[in-house]
Structures are given as C-alpha cells and as structure tokens.
Amino acid sequence: MEKIGQIEIRITGSKGNIELSPDNYDIREIISILENAENLLYSGDKKDRPNIAYKIEEGSVRHIFKTSIQFIIGFNAIIGQVQQTQNIDFLELSTARAFENIQEIAAKKNYTFTIKTSLDNSNEIKVDKTTQLYRTEAIWVDAEFYFYGKITNAGGKDKTNIHINTDEFGSVTVFTPVSFFENLEENIIHKKPYGIRAVGKQHSETGELDKSSLKFVELVDFQPTYDEKYLKSLREKAKKSWLGNINPDTWLRELRGGYDA
Image (cartoon, rainbow, N blue to C red; front, side):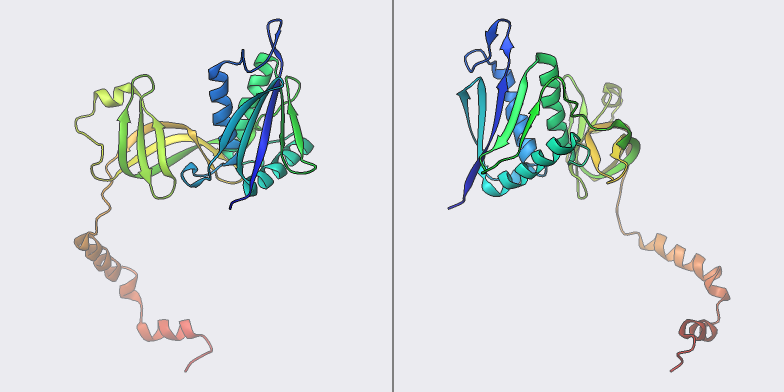
C-alpha cells in the first residue's frame, strides 16, 4: 500500500470584522487554493500524478491535502529552501507561479498563509503582505518560438486561441487575435501539420518556456514530406561545386594523417 503524507495550507485573517472560517470562506477562494496546491506539488504533466485527497477544517481555514509521501518529502524541501532564501526563481514555472498567486492573495486580502507538511520537524513558510515571493522579472526575457504539430482546437468566446499538439512541448496554447479567425479561409483543426510562429517569455538561464505568455504571430504551412527530386538537385549542385574539386585519394590521405594503413 502506498504511503501517504499531507500538506497543510492554513489561512488566517478576517472578512470585515468577522474572523475567517470555513463558513464565510467563498467557493472561488477554495477553487483557487485547489489549483495552486496542485501546482505546488506537481510541476510537470498532471495526467500521471498520484491522487490528491482534500478536506477543509476550522482554524481559521485549514486546507489539508493528502498524497504520496514521496511528493510530500520533495515539497518539504522546497518550502524549506523558499523560506530560507525568500526567493522562488529556482523553482519550475508552475510552482513559482503558484507561490506568486498565494502571495498576491495574501497582499490583496491581508491574509496570512502558513504552509507545512505532516513530516516530523517539517519545514514551514509564512506568506503575508510583508513577504515578496515574486519571480525576478529580469530572468524572463522576450523570445520567438516555432511550434510544429496538429492543431487540436481553435477559437474561443472571450479569449481566442489556438491549441497545437507538439512533440517537444506537448499541448501548447497560443493566444490569437480574432482578426486571424475572421480571415481564415479553411478549417485547420485536425488537418495536416502546421507551424505556428509565436512570441512569449523564456527563462534566460534554463531556457524554460512560459506557456501562459504565448502570443500568435503567423501560421506557417508546414509540410514535412520527403522530396526526392529536391534532394537530388542538392546533390547535383554539390557535385558541381566543392565536391567536383576534390581528389578522392588526396582527401583520404589528409583524413588519415600519419596513420596510413
């Protein structure tokens, strides 16, 4: 049986003159904590993560998350490092953003978050309006990207975008202006592979891509087909240029150097 541990996110504060409790804690606030807790624990692909159980308790509001002890141990190390350095630049993007979201809630609503695990002598971190758990903006720089793959979805009601499934980055969402769809003459969903040129943010040290920052530039007609005629023309062109001027015996002697057989 898999060993289970837990993390606790305790929130203290008030709503007006009333102390915060599960009875006056809004459902939207619960949803926000659930989303951020998942990113705190699992920064990668969520499809393969283990189960996370959840309950909310008094005092003022205590969010309890239970999951595999392996991930609890890893998260305990993270909160220890964040508490010690008061820096989140070393974290993977989704985890760093989760800490930022909690920091923003603390500053906006004057809440105090206390985060710890169920491990003995657990590390503990407090986030309130006096802390500054934000990424260093200078680390994230503007960059241009090309994504190749099949488009799985396009459009949208409020925020229009294109979803493209790539081998390198998995599923990528690119925010796209309405004008692109208005001028689109064909259906691009689940058709041939396309290329999308986009701009966004990239970590200047690790090269990590901020998927939430991507903005559409243009659609590229991408056809990764094997063109024998084109390749033959390149070979013929090479023969007539630098290959035609090479003496095979001389080239082989130079390649061998002093190691003639």
